[in-house]
Image (cartoon, rainbow, N blue to C red; front, side, top):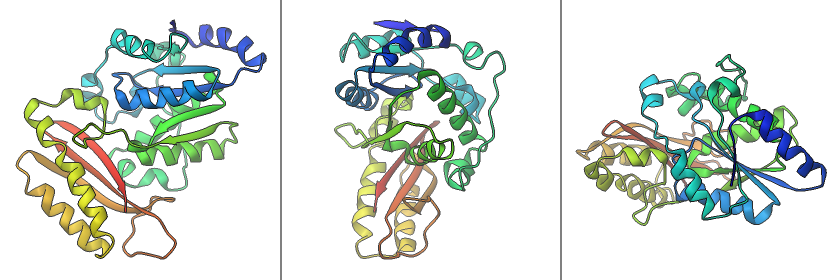
Length: 281
């Protein structure tokens, strides 16, 4: 398996392959790979001639320095996992200095309001960091197709907007949320959960499933009340927010409008670990 630590080396290797007509798939990650990541990678390997997986903990998208410091990192294990899928995967694992040409800073973006709600509201500057790193990665890899999980649904919509705004010739492929057997959405942060909090965390999805069922007969206000009350009553979980939003523009929805699609978005702390999830209503 080839591992590239500089963008120059990766581009030098990929360019002849692309010029020969090879189709390139790309899976951007921050490492600490799990089965959710591997589902994205398998999708890319099955549908492209080349698959590039980036492993880069991007400092510009962390609004909390402590969260950046604690983010799990294990490149050796990540590479071993990728080899179980295909030894031909290309791994891009740069350091921040090379990636940002010595100046680690975010570009400012306007995503037509997608960046101002939910995660954008609670994590100022987060989506400037996401937009900056993904745009740079797209410019380096120049993929035909890129794969993103629906667990980070707001991020997915923002990446689609990024591609549209900059007229990038890249197809964005959404991949459904990959869950553990008990329903917990797979996340690199799950590795930081204590055994007690790991046992409690699947309750988040149980509540979301019930909210989805309630959406057939109850108002959005009633659903918000149910979710808030259920999480608040759990002794090991703390609700940061639950929001019901239009699936396309992510704007908070107060009432159902025929023809629109909606999702429930939730963020819950299990101890000091911040967990996100969502479900279609």
